Image (cartoon, rainbow, N blue to C red; front, side, top):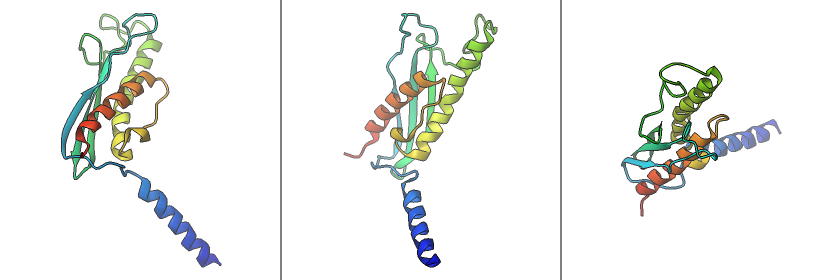
Length: 148
């Protein structure tokens, strides 16, 4: 009986592992880039918004690498200065929240490589606009790479 449970357990584990990192679509090898729409606050202010650009590298038909960068509406990349006012931290809470969003960019890109599809990327609390930008741009980049 124990042997039977062990075989069932192994089969279940293998089925779960088979789904990890696999994609439903085969992509053409190459590097593809796409940009999200511009996001503007509900109140019309431009602070804290902008757009994102995803660059995806496909190798052997699968996602091998991904980068995600976010930009202000004026084209300035959001980096270590994002959330500062005139080069200094005027509001520490705002700065920390802005930097959390910047840090999420790398994690979204890593999740896409592992999951193999945008649906497999989980949103990170405090970085939901970045998540929306990421998914939009990633889907557009991957649609360029789809084998037709």
